Structures are given as structure tokens and as C-alpha cells.
Image (cartoon, rainbow, N blue to C red; front, side, top):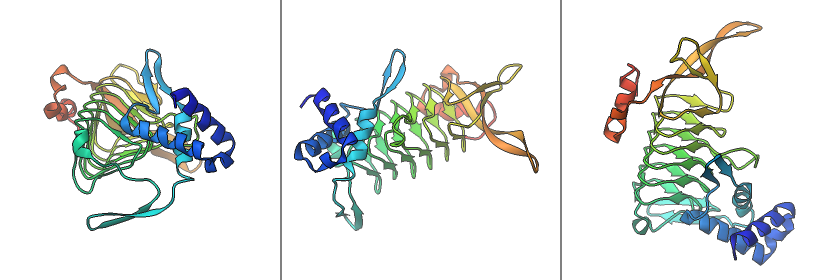
Length: 273
């Protein structure tokens, strides 16, 4: 079954959920999940004109849940009760997985990925050389590039619905500091460095303060930016209060391109990692 046929069956099932009891439809959806799992399809792909989101693949992920049966799964002393199988055969995939890290079937982990005790959800794509550090989570359909460091406790949001919404995208070489939260389709461009506790949502003000006047951005962090949490004053009926924002304080230097010196990208500006 080619990709065009798979897409047609998924779209038909999306319009008519009764088709989910049809064996050919279930096989098509399962095949999409299998191809996602191998990294031969992905929910979003980079193009010369930016990232393209493939909504039909997100539909396949959503439709995968209804016909899956709940089942008990045992892993050593641990017991799980869920619909979605876990990934396996990590040795053959060239992926290092530290207990009790968990990745669901339908998430792609490229050779050279390291999972510390963490979680990667269905539809996510994690490229080679990337580390997902302890207690970090990679949500459904999130796209993580090559040689990214996702530090401890980072929360990368997932997105299945609404289907028009873009997934979180973190491009090659980015460094995401401890306890950052990145959700609602935010895009982190290549080589950007986020300090600890940066929170980015679709409504977060991103303010470039490197020039004489602030420049406000929304929805993305530019390539090689160094970013820290900030706040600004906002008026409310009850008075003026500080509201969180994100500050771009500079650009990453070439000397910080090695993973071992990424922390220096922040220390150059006398901020915490």
C-alpha cells in the first residue's frame, strides 16, 4: 500500500469513524504508525519554505487509539495498563535507553539518541545525537533535531488536536535548559540556547533586548539566540503586575558549539544554566 493509498484510507476513516471496524482501514492506520516508528514518515518536515505539517498523519495517530484494546504489559517489576505498545529492540536501533525511560510505538528515535529516565510519546521524532535528559518529556508529534540537548525536567508539549495546530519543533544543535516548558507549536531554530526555566507558549512575548530598542517576536526563537526568562509590567483592573516573558539577550558564539561548552553560552552573559 503506497503513501497516497494510506492517506486516502486515513482521511476516509476520519470522516466516517464506522470505518474503524473495517480490517483494511485498521491495517492502513497501523501501517502509518509502523512507518512513523521507523522514521520513514514524520508529522512535520523541513522544506525550503519552512516546516510543513502533515495533518493526515496526525489524524492517523488520533485514529490509532479507538481500535486499540487496553492491555496489561509487564517490564521487569513494573506493570502498565495501556492501549499503545512500547518501543523495543533498542540495541538494534542504536539507541541508549536508561531505565525507566519510556518511548511509545510510533515515536522515532534515530541511532545515537540517548534517553535518560524520560518519556517520548507517539508521533514524536527525535534525531541522531540528541539526549533527552532525566524526567524530560517529549510530547506527541514533537520534532526534535540532531545533536539537541533536552535538559532535566524539560516539558515539550504534544499536539494532536486541533489538527491545524503545529507541533513543537526544536531544530539541530539547540540546547534546552533545565525545567524549560515549550508548548503550543513553538519553534526553536538551529543552535539556540535556552536558559533554565524559560516558558514558551503561543502567547508568550519573546523580546529581543540586544539592541537600543526592544523587538517583540512571537512563536519562535531565532537561530543561535541566547534566551532567558524575564518579565514585563502589565496593567490589570486591580493594578499593575509583573507578567512572564522571554528575553533574547545575545547570540551564541562559535566557541560554544561543542556540547561540552554549551553552558558557556549562558555564562558569557552571566546567567544561570
